[in-house]
Length: 409
Image 1 (cartoon, helix red, strand yellow):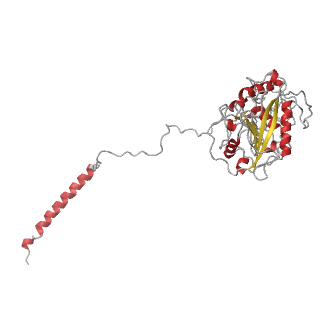
Image 2: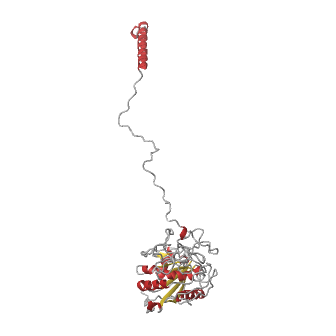
Image 3: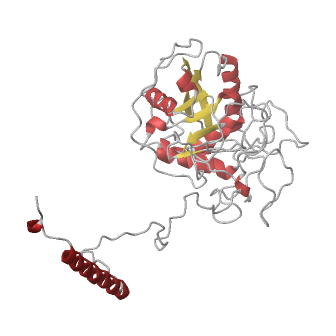
């Protein structure tokens, strides 16, 4: 590992810009700035952007990773532009070439700042491997204070195997990094001196794998660099002697954008990553486009100039295939990780107990012949008396009325 830290590990980058007309377009200058931010962060050089909240840059940790932009392909496709959709995912899968060594980046519009895949999921699901970004988080775009290019640095950190610095809170193995102090939850803005876990020192708010503003984060640690080297070597076969991939994609050069397909592939992906990050949100969009090997980001502080048409039911704002990093773009609607209760009441209706009496009258047909009720005894006696009186009356009439045979014509 020590030898590799002092070497150079080159990674080829294939950039895909999804647009809907002019929406989402990125100039070559913006992409060049983004690549500069990425390389400066991983080489241990200070960013060109100013610090914020009164601090100055401390020690910086270099890593051996360097990123070479190979191609930029611009695709005008309104369905692909919405990178939260299955249509966009299908198109991304059709564009994915190369090997696990190659970094594929896709930009468009999304309710998140971005998401990325973990290295361990690549061998089983190359087509979903890569980083997906909200184009507004690139340098000098519109999502302030996350528009200095550090969203991509954070997501590439996930792509190389890093977890959030606040992973696991104050207990357990946390982010599996010894030299990042434990913190109970993600940090937002730039809270100098924050110490949320007893005995571990100040929270690593300046680390690229936290959730602070771009102007606040500026470094990786030595142990994080060691982890990235190991993960990249084991899962991406990236070593100091890595050359350009033999199965290199044939995308358009940066200065020659191509016309894009107007229709996205319709065949749904059949495979998805199998390793699930522990900080993956518990709920997902009704049309889920995040394979299970992703990590997403969800910042919690307000961004007043973020587009108003963002759906509110998507997972967090940063990396979705590996742990992620930025605070929620919808803070008022999406709680921060520290405020999410450990258990939620069920939204399922409670089953109706089986012992509740039925209010529907039960009518059972009778199997026996109906019986005629007996008349009261008094009524029968009166009837018999009247019958006798009528018989007597008829007898008297017969005595006084001549019979037919005695009638004279």
